[in-house]
Image (cartoon, rainbow, N blue to C red):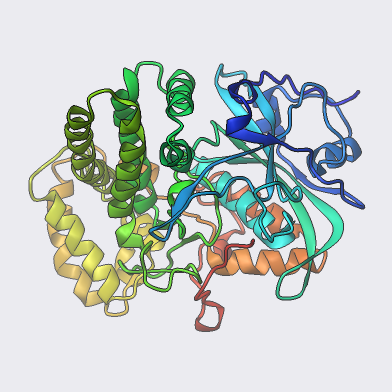
Length: 472
């Protein structure tokens, strides 16, 4: 039975200012690495053999109804505006309506050159493809809004980076690929009709309750505030929070040099290109506000009363830090077992984070161990934890079931950097067993699983991953 994807494309109807029509470049010998059947069921993607899946998700074969294109956008990269970015190595095949009634993009990443590739080859190698596959699906299992992975295909070709690497293509699924940078493109060009068209499209697609450009700005603000707080709650560092990597839908998008912290450090940076720490763990809330301000600057270009628009947009943006902090506090309360709110909770949480940093303690394992009563053992100097623990237990005594709250809030497993690197090295050597095992364990991150203790363990000194890379 041939593959059936029930495409219902709308972005392609916006017109050629928004994209360039582009077919993927065929590859030599596509071979299916992974196919996400539960996600395929949600998207109502049916039929086909592994052989046909490899052909379709490598870009060699176009399914009926696809309307392949590369999206245009601009963006601030590390604070510097680039007027022309766009999908340099990705092709949007089209959109589908899922069984849940929601609209999803299906995109090939690593599918060859586009008009936006500049000097790039438009390809991806196996490591970043598997990294995004595992981490994006892990984020989904953690309950954090994210793009997802439908398939990974080896191309049978060599991609040249520092040396020759095995090529691969990722099939990514997103609520949309609309970015802050999409709006910036038209605002900077003074293409106001296109900016209005894009604004109406984004509202209809994502926030039908929003009223006009400022209503859209509020809705994006609220979604992004929830997202950033969720990142912070699991120790996730995106690594490249450029405006072209900031999704209007409030999903985590564009997994490049991302990582989860092991030992807690507020100023932790992993990205090899973030030399000044712009996108460090503790800077993510303020960068999200900065990105929202860039969206506001773009959106107000279409309004008739610029001064009134500036005043309203300023008020919306200035409210974001408090929203992030409130959601952060709600999530971290739950991480220490608290469902009710008291004024001293912020101080209690902040003191624990200071102890984690001073004691070089593992972020994930300390919070998971709180509910088990053995968090003390996670610290270099366990006695430093005792005073905080007494105060915390007194506070928990005022709660109904703090252990249940903690179990639901604190993952046991995260995709740890050293295991990701081990998985990639194994896969390059032809062994996908750790890739498959990590998917299985990370699909249930809140449940202790038999024979998975190695995936909980922080890295030994010789296993520490000091830097992560974009993979382009």
